[in-house]
Length: 150
Length: 86
Image 1: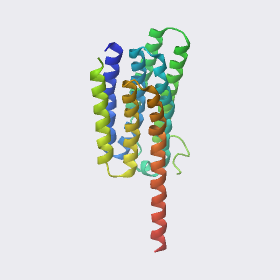
Image 2: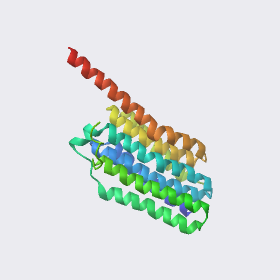
Image 3: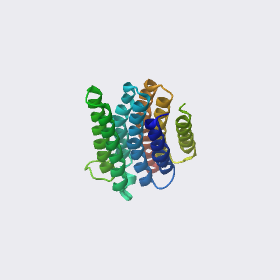
């Protein structure tokens, strides 16, 4: 094990473990937030693992997760809109913290890797991850018009 | 050499799968299933199978919850119609 995989282990045990707890218990609004956060915490872990194993092709699952994770959250925001309207989920600080963690991981990996094609892929992954999660959490909170009329 | 990492991800998958079985409401079950898909993808990556992780992500994180929620919706709507007919 090297420093990268240790960091990934810590992110998985602390972050994803907490989201598993959050999604398994509590009211519906807490569960949807936990589901959204699980994406934004697992994706940086996958990036850290790719760096730790020294296999650039392992970035692909992280890219797919950054693309499909927010899509899954949007599915929940659309189809659970009636239930979420009664008590809308609001956890802006948690969402910003998780997005910030993803952005920091992507920036550190870019600095370590140096400028080449892999860096472009990393930046695309980071942009998709942060943007997608912010949009998904807005949709969950009812910020996007139209997501309420399911 | 990566034993702690494998143990952590296996524990996550086990906890999530147990929760998916224990939760009763199908909508909440779909949420737990989405997280289970993500943790399984991480497990496959840790076990050096990123191609399996890719397909797991595609199926587990968006498609399975979508299918589940759509069928729950349809069943509920049909139930409501039957209630009205009575």
